[in-house]
Image (cartoon, rainbow, N blue to C red; front, side):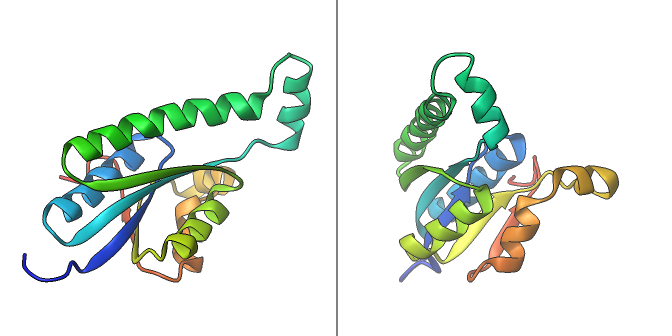
Length: 152
């Protein structure tokens, strides 16, 4: 592919699930084909206040432990992308995932979101909600949703 890439920055929300990993592969493929310049991985840490209160009685700062683990996992993914010659960065931020994703899109001037979806429907969808659905509705840029195994 010649000329400027179609997309500058692709935001890839990362919860480390199989669908999220498939979305990362799809975004990496866009970069490797020359259709995109870089990937911004983003992970939103949201811990309900009730769980934080419970965890305080158990010793240690739960939010810090979650943030550290996410940052470690994200830096491994980042190293893999960079080994493949893909320009990338990551953000592990506190907040509801949908809000964190959309804020990152705005702050990074992203052109596309590529995100995994579990594809729940019916009662599972009602019980679990859908970050992907909310992002699709509110995003100022196109959103490509990927189920586990769809990246190939």
